[in-house]
Structures are given as structure tokens and as C-alpha cells.
Length: 332
Image 1 (tube, rainbow, N blue to C red):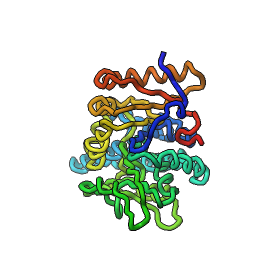
Image 2: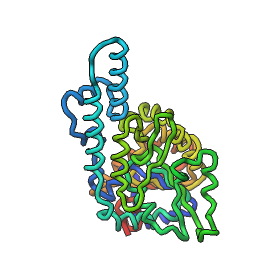
Image 3: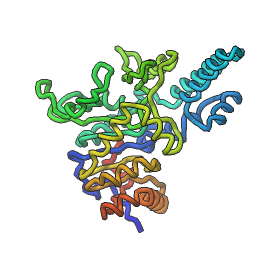
Image 4: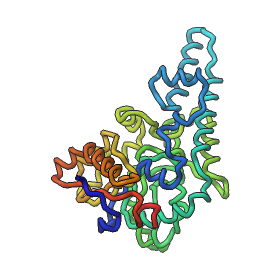
């Protein structure tokens, strides 16, 4: 039987550790995120849903690109087919879905404050969620003496200098830092028509969600996020982004020889399980959720099976802890 203990019972030293966040971490903050995919939640007409089915995808951006490409091909052939109205409807469905799933920031502020306290000792945070929660957490946290940094400056990622952000800016009163990365992109990251990848930000009191919605309306600009799908589809999407490749190829392998905590992460993506097996942490603790011991045991066994290569290669066992126990993530 796999042992599942409370967070406190683990006696886990998070100083210098890496924190991995999955969808369960977002659901803990707000049950609005308890969905399988944006596609699942979207209000799409039968015709638009048929396009998703024909392309075997749940990726809104891919469908919009396909519709635009179809229109260009038809024009080149002298055929009359206007797909722009369909592009507009798909885009509006995405915007409405993003808006519908997000809570108002004030609703989750107390939980995010607790999460920031939990996250502060970690050296690195890597989230596999593309929602706005971590962005809100970072911006709500006090700047000094600890600082959360995602290595973006003036909207641009520091590709060659992101490691330098680990150094506290003592002249500004910083004493410690935590670097934050978005392994599957985020709704506030965008890819321009020229391939440049930028971080969107709000000005003044303008809600970030409004900025995201406005960005989605801007023609060729794409939101940089890895949509739902199988692991192979996600790997293809990651390979197409310079930022996401940095996270996959350089940030995640830094787990080797360091303690790692995973909150709300199921490890269903084969590429992540492979990275962990090839770069084994010195200690790996994974949260499991369940309404009773039986459910928690089952969740733990599922995770262990997905990470069996890590267990074999490292000759290490995985520590499992109750996701709802005191002191973990959003639980004081």
C-alpha cells in the first residue's frame, strides 16, 4: 500500500526546491477551473464544432489558422468561399469561454496570498496551467524582500539572460527570488505575426482579462498556450515556440539533484515523465486528492505508474501527501 501523509508529516525542506503546478492547483483556488478543456466549455455552433472534429483537434488557434488558410487557397483557385465569419465565431467563442472560466480577482485574492506564502521558499516555479492565477499571485505578492520573477522585461523574455534574474537586486531591497515559468504558455503570452513572443500586461486599473480579450481580437496575433490534447500534440506545440523550448530544454532539467514538489499535477504528459526520469530530483513529493483514503491511494498509484521510469532509474520512492492538508498551497 502506498503511504499518503499530510504535508507537515513530510517534513519537506522547500528551500531551493522546484514547485510544479498542475490543473489541480488551479481547481483548489476556484472550482471554475474544474474542466477538461476550453473546447469542452465553449459554446460552439454545429458547423464550427465539425471543423474541430475534422482536424481532430481541440486547439482554437489551429482551427482559426486552418479556416484562414482555406480562404487563401480558395481565392488562389478563383473559388468563392468566405470563412472569415467562421473565424470570428470561433474567436468569440474562445474569448467568451476564457472570460466565463475565470473568477473575479477579488474572489481568489485571500487564497492567492496564502499560495504566495507557500511558494516563496521555492527557487523555481513551473506551472503547466495557462490561466491567470499565477500572474495574479505574483502581482499581489509584496515586492520586497522576496520577489517572484518570470524573466520578462518590457514584454520580452530574457532568452540568454534568464538565469541572471535569480540574483536578488539588493539595491532595491530584495533578499531572495523565485523564478516563475509557464511550461504550457499562458493566456497573457502572445505570438506576433513576425514570430516574436511577448507578455501582455495591463495598464493602471485595467483588468488583465480585458487585455487578453482585446489581444484575441487582433487579427494574426496568437495567444501562446498549449491547448488540450495528447502528449504528442503538446510536444509539437512546444517545439514551435522559442520560449516554451527554453522551459522544456533548460528550466525543467534543472530539477536534477534538487528537491521537487508537485501540486495538482497528474503527470499524464509523457514528455514530462521522461524529463523527470532523465533528470531525477533528489526528492520528489506529489500531492494527491481524494475524498477518502481509497481515492487518495488510487491517485498515488496512478502517478507512481506514470513515473515508473523515474522510480527505476533513481531507485527512489515518491512521497505522496494529501493535497488538502494544512500548510500546503492554499491551505493555511
